[in-house]
Structures are given as structure tokens and as C-alpha cells.
Image 1: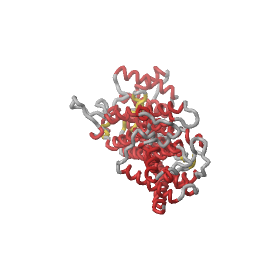
Image 2: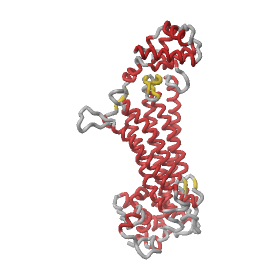
Image 3: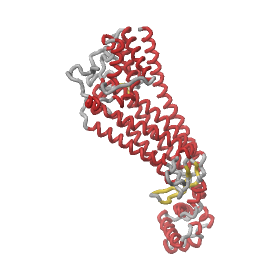
Length: 498
């Protein structure tokens, strides 16, 4: 078939160039979005007195027939088409003739057409990813509620640091993912804007009304400037950036759970449905889904880098380079969404081993910081004096392979005289309290600490935040659904009346 868009040129692409030039494969993702955008545009043209009602009815009827074929899996688009836009317009003209079908593209360029399609698709993906992210937050908070008194080692630099709880750890990631959801919703606000009606780059002399298509398609506003509307892709880069930050948090959590599921730690165990086995070693239970989440983070980073590289040298106005942005964008969205789905399942089914976590604390030097703070509060030493004294006690314990819980008041007095040059009287009960892991935990009541009361407050607060985020997400989702349902009803009315 002869291309709709090549009237200026005497020859068609040869097969190799057509294959190189077409964007049909990546455009399949926006097939129905293109139909929706076209229907909204043509309804607007009719309401502006540009397309007669009878012609509109025929155009919309043809578009709906194409949609039905698509949903039945009957559409096949070859490389003879430059893109899905050409295919759909060509099919409409083939169905109703060029006198009527030729009106479909009035006052529109492929430049604003493709951007409206992409924005319609990306907003759906952002809503879906945010919804899945909130499910992960809910799973984390649910597991945290079960583990507010499950003591565990907290690490810095990979070394024993302080006594914490598994609940406190889980809430830390719930907080990170809540921030990710807020980023995604803020990004949604910059994605859900209408570029349609901007023409190729400098607007159109056709009497379009961009506010009408904004309402019909459920956009929150306009990308007002026509250059920015057709050539700007910062919203796509921001989408990938938000996904990259999100998956970096997923990857870090996956790394923790990978280490903790090893035989050496045994803190947690993945459910069988999220593990794999070895082709040769029958004893193996591999946490491979966590490994893949960590590996796929590189995929999302690559998509972001690819997008940044694509747009950095493109002049103002539309260039074919921008056609390529769809490929990494779709891949980024897919990888992020599936990684979230898998991590939610992992967290929901994870077996927690409290006894293993507690074992790691036994005899550990992790209580040293509590011993310092106890001497500051109870023995009236300055912090640095207490620090120097406990450092000496730790060094002695390491050399003699003792635990700090073996200390007696006389030991503290002896070392205080040697290190600080003065005696020290500390009640033995205070030493026992400061060197017992559970007591250490209960002494630390600073806001945001692992103390069960503080974690309980955090859980209550995060539950409220989660509810609020769900309400905000539902409001956005409902607004889009209402707009698309209204568009569907208008199409049906015009098809029948036309």
C-alpha cells in the first residue's frame, strides 16, 4: 500500500529502510490510546463546527470496529506502516472513504498525536505502579506489626552497631516506599497534561479547542506552549527517574534479605514459590527472585540513562530521535511493576526466624554504646570520658574473649582509674541492664527508635498515611475512569446518531 504520509516523495522506502524506520512494535502499547485520542480530537472538531455530525459518526464507527478487531487479536501491522497512527488512519479511510476519513487528522500532527498517546499510557502505568507500591507498603507494615519485639542486630559498615527490631527495619523501608509513591504521584501531575492541539510545533490555524480534548481525555491541564508540548520529554525522563529511585530502594532491601536468608544468618527464609533450586546440588534453595530484583535495577538505570542520552542533544522541535524514547520507557515501567509485584509476594510470605536473630545478639559487643550512655546518665561522666572508658573495656574483652555482660562494678572502677585517672562507682544492676540486649532496647525511647512503643506509634502513623495515599490514588484513578467512560458514551451517541 502507498503511505498516507509520503505524498511529497516519489518513492517508497525499500524493505530494509522500512524495517529500520517503523515504530510499529513499540507503538502496539499505545494502540487503544491512539484510538481514544483520535476520537476525542474528532469529537472536539465536530463540536467546533469543523467535522459534520454524519461524518463524525462514520469515523467513530470505523475506529470502534478497529478497536474490536484489536481486542479479538485480529490486527496485524507490517513494516509497510511507519507507525500505528498511519495504520489506524489508513484503516478508517479504507472503511469510510477519503472524503470522510480524510477529516480524521484535521488540525493535528503526528507530533502532538504521539505525545498524547504516550501520556495517556504512562499515566495508566504510573497509577498501576503506585497501587502496587502501596500494596508493598501494606505488606511491610503488616509484617512489622507481627515483629515489634523481634530483636535483631542493626549494622553499620557491615559490622555490629546497635540492638534493633525487625519491625523497626521493615518500617524503614515502608517509609522509603511511601516517599517513592509520593514521587510517582507528583510525577503523575506533570504527565497528565494535554499536548493535543499543539500541531507540529507552532500550533494550527484550524479552530481547535484544547480545553475540550483536555476534558474528554481526563487530563488535569494543558502543556500550553506548542514547542514544549511536542518536543519536551522531561516528563518521560522524570518517570524513569522516579522508577530508578524506587527500584534502588527495592534492590537495597533485596540485598538485606539475600544476606539474611543465607545459612550463616538464617534470619529469614523465602517461601518455596519465590525460590529456585540447583541443577546439580540437591540441598540448594536459592533466593533467586531477590537476586533478579537486584539485577533488574540495572535495567531500569539503563533505561533512564538511555532516555537522558537520547534527549540531551535534540534541538527544540520534533525530531525522529524522540520516537526511540518509547522503547526504554516501556521497558522501565514493565520492569519496575513486575519487580514490585514479586517483592510484595516475597514480603507477604517470608518466614521470619526470631530465635536466629536473637542468637546473633548473645555475647555481642553491640551493647557498648548503651554502656557509654548509661555512664553519661547515671555516673555523670562526659560523653567522651565514657566513650574512652568503654573503648578500653571493649579492647580488654576482645583480648580475653569475654562478653561485656561479664563486667562487674570493680572492673569499671579499675579501668576508670587507669583510663580517666579517677574512681567510678556504678551499681551492678545498672551494668546488667546496660549489657542486656532487651534492656538496651527498652532504655532507648528517642522518637523514631526501635523501642516497641516508638515503633507502635510509627505503625499507627504509617497506617494513616497509607490510607491517605490510597484515597489520593483512587481519586486520580476515578477521575480518569469517569473521563474515559464519558468519552465512550459520547462515541456511542455519535455513532448511533451519525
